[in-house]
Length: 330
Image (cartoon, rainbow, N blue to C red; front, side):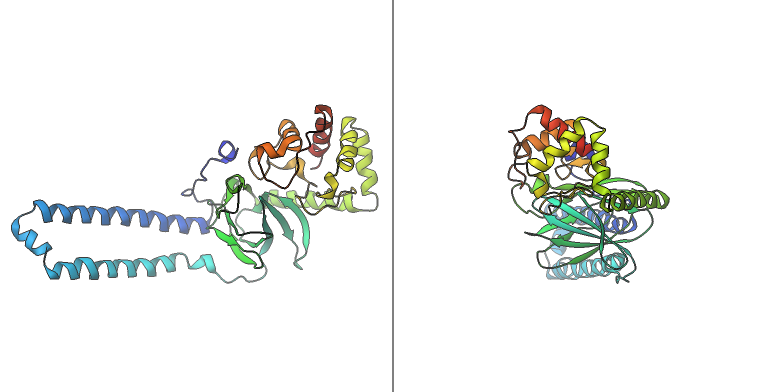
């Protein structure tokens, strides 16, 4: 589950980037101001009840009401508003158009992730996992395919809604490498609480290596000999070859895409790199052979109402074969 992987709820006061740091500073300031105001109110209440008669008369007068009940809150809240807007102004900095862009689409109940090239075209696709370089602002193009979702990775930025028919932009940036949990922060249906993802921040050189390896894998798979290469690899792997055939035969290919194969479905997550993902089921399970088998065999008992049917008609051996083949997709 998400809580076992990255903590639950996500640590909202542990910023790992400049945008999240400003939100955290504002949050702590609001907490501190709330404590101060509470103490002032308690002190005034005590003085009005237990204080000397002169103090009681002063606190009950019209002047005290105007100063303490109108002027003081007005000045404090106005100053807080101006300071808060100044502090968080960079969260809405103009998008220059040359930042790295990732399109994230909220679905029921998972996140489709598409990396965009210089011309705004999708160059690679993933699900429930985003990879970004450290020290570089990244623009997330947020969309929704069905209902209102909300994208929130507290370590990196504030949250922003994903609204059907609209595209909203969110700037994120990491100042240290690491893996940071994120969630959907807007109730979107029965499994809203089980809709998570992970953001992985790499050092710039490591991120370039990761990207180049992904693009090379896609280019090889989608090339003229991509299908032959995939079949040759799985044929040498024994049960994985059987798993590949089962994947195609039982209907998985109708909903999922795997580069270099005849699987070109678009309804579900792209599985071209599923073997390298950290989680399954949108952040709710660690990714290994056993959880892969369990998810394929009975996803409805793990996440009821999700749009993937349970394949409980498959034997344990067949589930293992499919899972072995999917583990190879890296």
